[in-house]
Image (cartoon, rainbow, N blue to C red; front, side, top):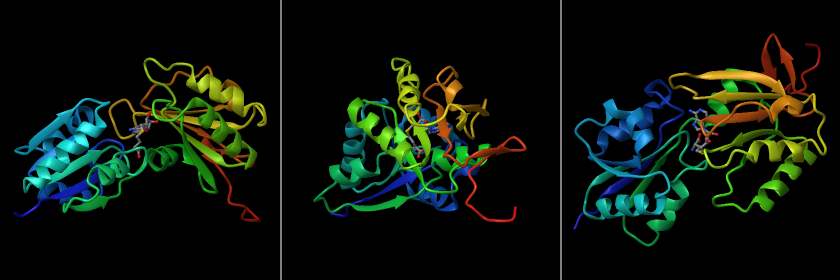
Length: 244
Ligand code: SAH
């Protein structure tokens, strides 16, 4: 029997214009699409006529199994993640779920929120940076704290993913408290919300004021390193070129 194929596709932050040509092309090959409903809705017009294997937000294992089973039945399946599928996305889980099976898998990179959000703010991540998710659903909070302290100690610029959810409203204030143990309150910070989607917005602030900023699960937070400054309203982490 002919086994199908799974394309794991990062669709970027929102609308179609931030999808890569490769992602668009891969979607065209698929007869069947799996993903969180909200992400599928973002690209609904591209999915017309395709079977939808929809599951809720916290049903990732189930979603990967559904994709695997459809591929085992010979279908060409797209497993869609927002941003990049390898950055807090489903690429790793899919590879684990399909381990040992004969299914062909191709992973298509997408623009992750650190890049699309960074571009809205300026160039906050031009030097070494760390991405840290504040979600403690799959990672114990103690480990998140350790990573925050490590990034601060190493003078990394930081992109914070999952800074809040409906239930988890204290994660960003707690993270700020930890970072302020070693970083000055004037440290330049930025927040971006709904990148590439309706209502897109971004603003600058400082680490001292970050905890009070409204933020939700559609926000990505940027914390500068010790050299980050504001240039004409842009958040810039200089690479160190002289004479500018
Ligand atoms: N795979 C995704 C990340 C998923 S984790 C990627 O590579 O971008 C979910 C978190 O990503 C959100 O809580 C938010 O911090 C960030 N994020 C994803 N899409 C976003 C968007 N359109 N605007 C702002 N933040 C976004």
